[in-house]
Image (tube, rainbow, N blue to C red; front, top):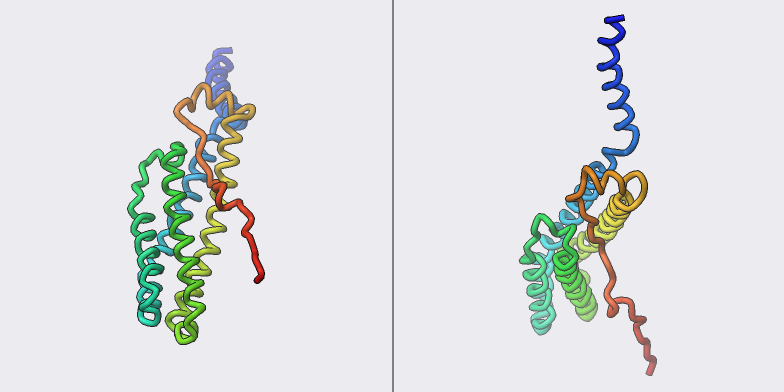
Length: 199
């Protein structure tokens, strides 16, 4: 009888641990870590793009000296994108997240204009350095799109876990400091349909 009583407490503790583990108590921290990891990949790809910009600008500069405004716009957009300070709470601070997203969008637009300008220079379009850099940039833009998609999905799972049962119970008791994370959005201007005019 004493042996049975002595086994009850450890057995109860083991059963309680299995019950708690199976009820989703670890889902919120796991989802948060997944979202943070995918965010790191987004930053990694943005950094890769940023590292390509100086070489691309220098290559174009050698062929298209008269396109100074476009080159300066790219350099300024890159400087702004890399100067945005990412605080630790950027993922849960919509304003900080939007500032970062806006800076990256400006850099994307400036790079798009630079690529469009290069179409007017046949010598540039046939330059091997330029072609290699353009290919790397296109590949990086694709990687950015994939990393953003993965981040959006990870944040969706995390935010859903904070709002649905049983996660909402854990969020209101054990994980009160956990906040929903921001995700990428598209501005009104980007959603406008471009007007095509034929003369």
